[in-house]
Length: 65
Image (cartoon, rainbow, N blue to C red; front, side):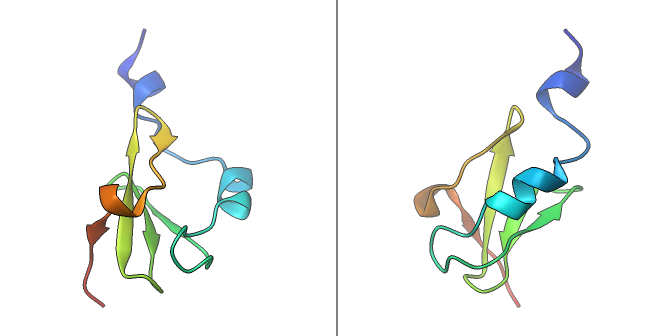
């Protein structure tokens, strides 16, 4: 198995259309470099592990701005 299978370089745009921030129910943006989904409204970044977004507030890291 290739590493690309476990850490995709992109997120399916259809997935971004469906997923929302579990805290604010607002939109998420994809930070490819960090491998995270970012909620600017909640100021949280949700990790993506092995290609699976972890949409738990307690797993998210706080961000500035």
